[in-house]
Length: 258
Image (spheres, rainbow, N blue to C red):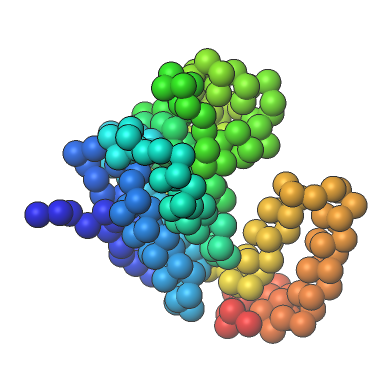
């Protein structure tokens, strides 16, 4: 019997999505990416959810794209099916913060999936690589674009052209991950971070995410203008006024996410 490709649960205001193809080390196929996209969009629509966590198993976050499924595809197969764009890019439509909790292997498409998240928490066992060159292929789910922005051109070239694997501490030094935690505390610490983020005003979280992403994709002048307009818009937010008044009154704010 086929297992569900992803498992979904909620922890308070946090939505948790677990990649669930353990026999294939969570290799990413169309069924899994369809299910992941559906789960992400469902949590994004849910007013009770303020942040989303994606995780895998202790052995592998995701060991890459499913090579067995791809080996006989032709150009027309991937072009007409809109491979990658059709479902892998669903992540770009998610407005709420998304955190990757990575243990074990994050190879190829698994590394690219983590890179597409807003924050990466790595267990000490985490390993990151883009080894597509070994198959005469290339990273195609954003790896050649997001990796240089995360760690710089020189180190990205090294990883892409030599298939170099980074351990968790190297990934932390390079700026690929946000923090490294003990293996046994990965989900606990990731959920604690997600719960903290989800406790804040959701509209403020979303505009901050949009502003940081804008900085990747535009000039400094354009990014500053976007940030300034979003700051001005905060003064139309009920939560912003509640937050400032609560600060002045030395009490916890009560956000209504408006």
